[in-house]
Length: 228
Image 1: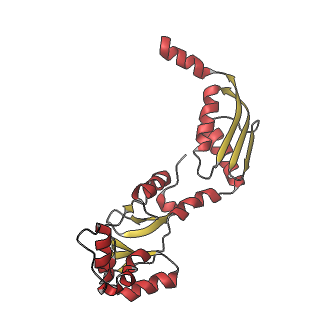
Image 2 (image 1 turned 90 degrees about the vertical axis):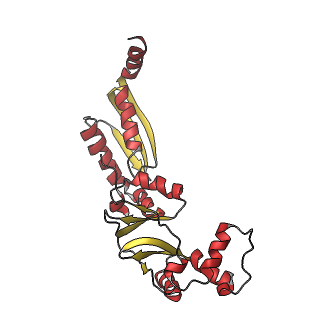
Image 3 (image 1 turned 60 degrees about the vertical axis):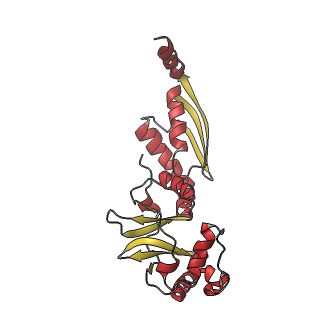
């Protein structure tokens, strides 16, 4: 059962800015498109990002006319001071930009976002060209799968194809992404594997695994490992 990739979830149409885009052009891009940040491209490849936070120093330091930060000011303050006198995207952008491959698994991308401390990751091909953007909201699309679709996947993919179990005698219910499994399987290992596979499905919120087993093969296996 293949996990969704970044390519299947990302936004393909991305609003971008050239490195030479003027300051006011950047403001208009954000305002007109209702976005909070825009990737900056040089030759089709992302080299930085301009967010609302990167534009505000122009007002914070009055275009560089306010008093300059002291020698003991932090790096972030000094960077904002430099941005205050910027006139193009190249001057005010934050770089480097965090990028990922379109082939990356959705779960890996979900881990990358908080690790990088960003709201979005820019997707590039093997040549480094921008092909899309993946945001937190894009990843949350996984949880809007219809319950009937999830139930069909559990029946056909988990039990039918992966466990080779006839799903008809089993009770499989999905309500709001919460899955309830009831019925009897031959072995305890199948019960545990079924619960694990269902829980890992994109869109599943919780699993109530009430399946029973005809015999507990897991106990026998552990005893064999210890005493065999």
